[in-house]
Image 1 (cartoon, rainbow, N blue to C red):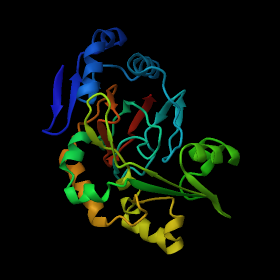
Image 2 (image 1 turned 90 degrees about the horizontal axis):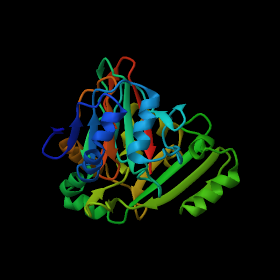
Image 3 (image 1 turned 90 degrees about the vertical axis):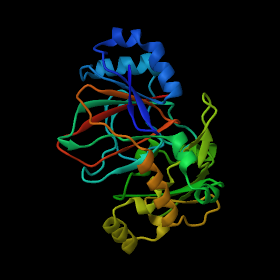
Length: 304
């Protein structure tokens, strides 16, 4: 057992885990590391979906289905998904999984099936350090939380059917009502809107963590050319997703740049190896994705 990382973010490395039995031998140490440190890397395993599922269940219990989706994924086996399918030449911003929702997974499991030829790391960032290093004026502006808006229309981002995993509008309406979301059906599809906190208290450590996806949902997370093209065709309300301060006022680009700067300062990345399994405590650790070349294939499972 070793530590890798920087002064802010560390992952506990178990580099002698060739099989499930060895993983069981380390079970208490792994679970302690996930509760306290927040990230664990198991190295030395083969890339095997059955083994990945067994380790997921051993450490986290029954896997979750991916619900209230915000990004495209493919289910390759029951409750095992591809990581977000996003253009290889672009980054995926740092975020805590489903922190825009009332329901989020406790643990995330990443399996490196095929490492990228170049790039393609999954950077992680300690969410406690992100909160602590966030400039006071930015924290103050986010004290009221984050409003997330989504506009579902055919051919632009996810459809509402894929996002909510149903073809029944009544199921969508019931979900929105039960989870504090307003909704409106339009000629083109569906619009939703809801407010969530910008930070949370992680129950095991009792520490406050930066826990939102304002920087990812906000339209400025898109490539500039893509954003300009979308705004030439659609009003801001019709963008696939967007974010505002909790009172509904616009978020300044400067505030988002400050958030991204803190993530850059805190984050740590390592090159994937075939068979690597990284497990993260979703409240304690945020993650993203670096651009890559080649046929990178990282698989994901989640537990509650």
